[in-house]
Image (cartoon, rainbow, N blue to C red; front, side, top):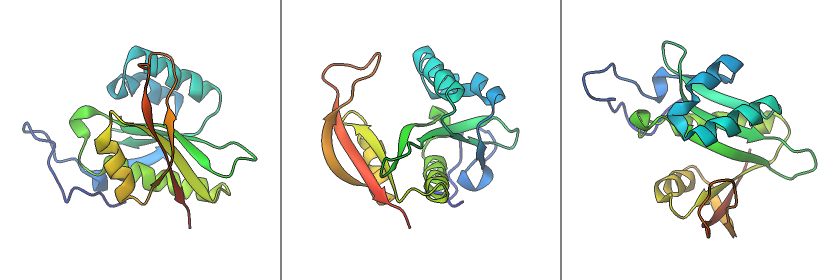
Length: 165
């Protein structure tokens, strides 16, 4: 899958890693030990719970099969759209097209599961993510306040939606 970074280097003398050099695959239990790269201990515990509940997750893995990004795709029957619950890329791997590749894979996955649209929430405190999702064709459909364990109050943002082909 193509990235949006045109081959940007990781830097620091490390090997070049771009979206073209990661593989996207379903998350496996062994991958969860690497999820600390995507957030706090609380977030990792949420990921473990979500995985145990059977929510599909996709991971972007490097050449060593180590996760460098992930996305949770909730598929709720009767809901008009699949829902991206959490997406993340390790901080040192950002801006290399990996999130773009993960989102495109999530779109294909949701479409193959019979969903006509994909939705996600973006907090106002994350304008870079919102710009990325807008570039990928997501449009704001509603304002909302994000409530989850550990979130600031208030925590405003937008619900975004993309119709899938």
